Length: 561
Image 1: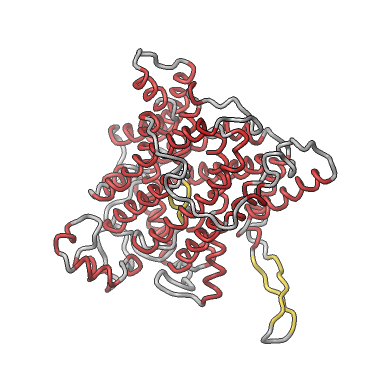
Image 2: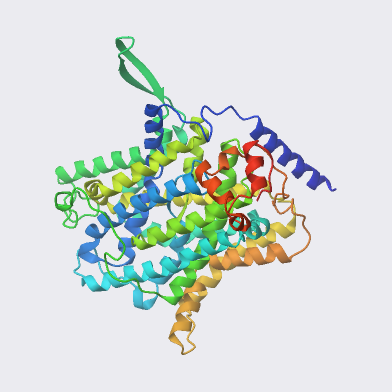
């Protein structure tokens, strides 16, 4: 063994030892905290997902070019996003992975959407005050819906045949780093457009950085009256670190309101609270409305967008498998068993299908922020995210709430998107800690993938393919303009073909090297008994075998991903 390999292995062992000696959880996966504590933690989890739930409705409403109907469409999309995210969270924590993870809109589906919207026939040159025929923007939205419905079966198929193990064994940090970095870089044009609307977006971005980084651990004194002691007392909580998005949006929105009432800006300014497109929006919105499939008509399919979404589904799945392992470590469980991971991917597919059916415009993925919150609060109880899912569904049904959020000025969404993409890029780069960066092979593959992932899409955006076959041209031009797809595919191919590095050098874990309790992954008893009563079901890769059930009940060791 070389010195470098020895050093890397020692580092990996130290990380494992550190995770094993992490502080004891206040509440484990199967524990049930007191009801008031559960409600508070569920509210926190819901607020953590707020930024992700908000950004996509704003982006989708712009991409479909709804014109004067943009604000009303946003109300619907926000409500549908909350409902689909809540349903996916409940399904995942109850029948899927069974750990405390929040689910919501996936940014992995954004690059195909941006590439599709940049095609000549889909470009939007109209503003939010222009009148656009309803059938035009509905046709665009239904095309996104139909293509997403097809691609959601990629999750279900891969989970059902048990192919997740293949991806987890062959997709490592050298593939993930370029792929996720290019995902963040692909949003730069949208960021520039939204941040350039008004300087308030920079103010919000600075507030986000201040709250999320500089004041993350600052304990804010909160006075309250104690009925037990019959006097006022003070509690302390890291409010800035737990609610950075909520606080930054609130303060920035308040500044926009002040500028509006003192007539410091024009009523048609993008930050005005008296804009035509949002005036009367809250008053006109119904109190309660249930989004349903087919509300805008029958779905349509774009071959190019469908293939792009299928590639995004693979990227989202790779990202989620990494989140599953991270959640297991935070929850002080062993590596997720293969049947749980397969089932979790199937549930993500079902969640994406629900989101597509409700015309949300994107698939579903795990939110790493919820895992970080579990680590911060030392509470990994499943019941907290199940309750958070119920809260999200209730907020989505309460349409007045969605209407209030739809009134947020566009530049403020730009600030949220900027920090969100920065976090995605940062998390992607953090994967390098387990890669041997002293090997020229690894550096060359990642650098080459990033460079070609930027160059090839730029070339085909300016020099599109023209073979005379319109459908083929559209498919190829769109696929070759997706930076994440081009760079990720190159990185995956080179990392698995080029010799000169061991699995450890590539940042890939050896199979079966992690152990720990597995009781948190158990299905509900009634469901487990039903599966065990039907022997043919136990052969399916997403159903726990009898031996797996016995091992889990004893906290034993099983075949892991």
